[in-house]
Length: 167
Image 1 (cartoon, rainbow, N blue to C red):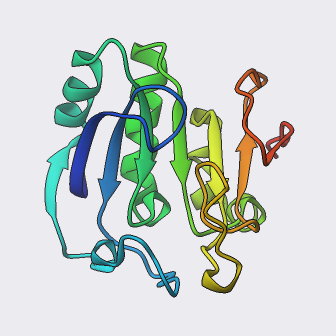
Image 2: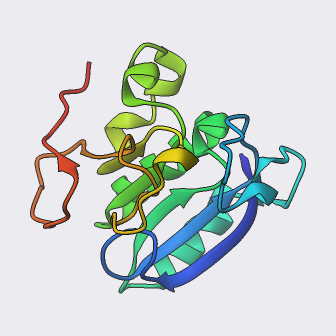
């Protein structure tokens, strides 16, 4: 199984708490005005990498957790679900995922919702340029929520919301 990606950033601290291996995928139909990564909109952009290759890179860095960003990983939900499942069953790493979909939209679609059980944190919602707030951590506008999908909520990050029960 392959994932179309634009880039992999290792040991970044910009995409969630602590060191992270960030996988930036290709493809996004949200087209948020003012998007910080509009080159990620092209579904044919970047290059394909296998889940096994990504997992090797992720496992090689014992210090970093994982971030899925883009683009929007939910447009490649089958492959990202497989990668997330493998990360969670083969490592002790946490996974943060950014998406332009809201959690309510994801939960309403069983195909999209398949990835949620494997994620630790979801940062949801489209970026809204008119609400841009550079003081927010890990998000660009206040409509975007940092949602803990697991019981672990020990990161003290303003703007996080409590555990959202998965349906």
